[in-house]
Length: 186
View 1 (cartoon, one colour):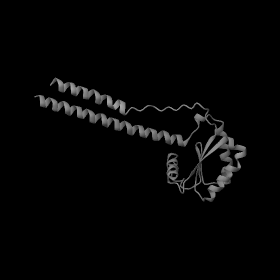
View 2 (tube, helix red, strand yellow):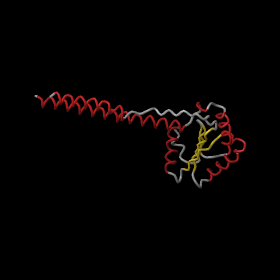
View 3 (tube, rainbow, N blue to C red):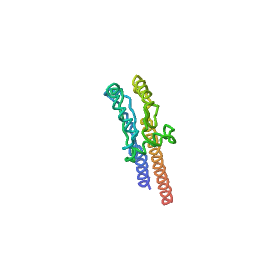
View 4 (cartoon, rainbow, N blue to C red):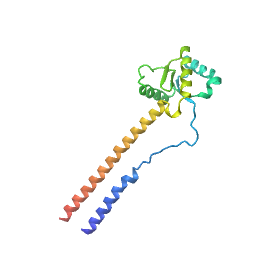
């Protein structure tokens, strides 16, 4: 009887420590030692062969000499790349534009977006790039960071639920072990 209690106590302690070691997740704080780029990110969702996309791309190239040091284009081809197409859908949904952002080009600069391309957009985009360039990098609205943060929150929530279930199963097993040990000793 004494031996059985010692074994159960050892199993109990081991099982209580297990979730703390196996499911422990360290906060992955990434501190950038290098200075963050001050360039404004322009998210450019386009389709290969789209004439409006080609026009927008040519326009961005034409302003590189004057404004190129102020912006960086993140290019996403959506017609032949399913992952990029899905990303565009997620971005449009997060921006509450899923009904209107159904075509390309879809251009996002900070908290502003343009669907399609027209010469009337050119000065607006330049003004937005200039305004964002003058703001602190950490205070800029960035839809991709927002999507990444939301994804991390969902993953953490899923991990927390899984850990809870493991702990419940362990305690259920311990309870059953104690019950049957007592039943056998009587």
